[in-house]
Image (cartoon, rainbow, N blue to C red; front, side, top):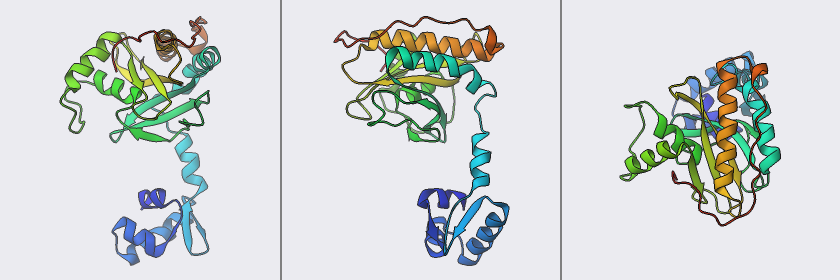
Length: 240
């Protein structure tokens, strides 16, 4: 029922019945219960998400210290590179944004918490490449094994305007152990003219800083100096 409301944003009983595939009487009963709990709001004859589900959603974290550990490194990376910077995870076969800081390509690819994209983003490809063997992903491209090996070798994943024209992206892992268990991906989105080689270095350093914050008290993480990026036609590292 909640998925049907999310997909329609705001709809009446008939539309939600069609979307959910449930009997109309069941939909009405569920909506009444959800409204009583504050999870859904009723406006006239229409229904939409309520404030309680919003508050509950804000409490979700892929790791309990991720927001605190990522705040300073993400801000520093955004300041130095001008990039749109975000933390993403894989959920239900899609790339899900957890945190975001707007940058120069925000008008083309806004990165808002809760936004989703196909798994084939730079962040998604990185997390699939680093996932444990046998992870439950759907069918992957025939060339994926070679791509995944290149990503693991490079330590970063790239998107060269593959998803959004005018936007390139670099993603590096955020890990919780020395073994490299990736809990999330730190990504930076920029215009195509920006030097992706330097950006990859900066994102990698920022990812390591966030990872260090997850493994110990955030206040002990030292300040990291990221290389300043510039527009260039230099070839970026492999791993796209």
